[in-house]
Length: 198
Image 1: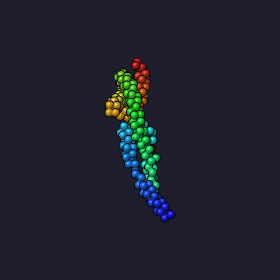
Image 2: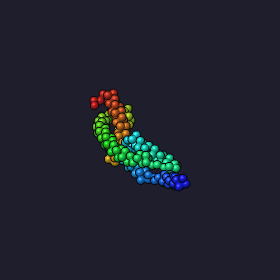
Image 3: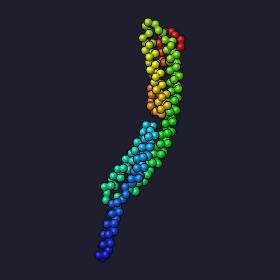
Image 4: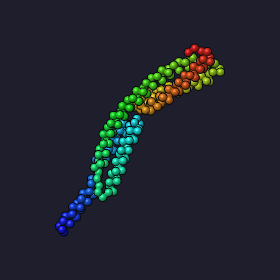
């Protein structure tokens, strides 16, 4: 009986030692963090912010579970290891999706830029027909100055596309499009009032 009791105590002690020494899944943590940094570098946070936030949340939840296990007498990292191991797979998918989204945004920005450039050429051509009488000179010069600013903005969009800032280019070219459309209506209104054909 005494032998059995000693055997039970020794077994329980060994279990406590092994359970208390469950190894922290550091390799999985490092791999998950590296995968998230890789998709951040691919600009997933800009092009697919919802999906990027979800993968970040997965890491945060996994790290909370790791911390919770650290405080336990009987540590077990099996479940959290599986969660952490899944993050690089999710990140690889997100990276591929980000590249697809970037290509879509780039194509959209280029398409709008082409349309905007054509509209701006029309505005510049129409602006050359604006009357330059004593009463109109100041307004015409203001319109031409605004067209010059828009020309500069179009160049900026082109440079943004060249430098890979596709989302910034798309946002800027959409704003420019509204300005050009408004300016087109304004110029045509002035020409109509002055009875000048366009």
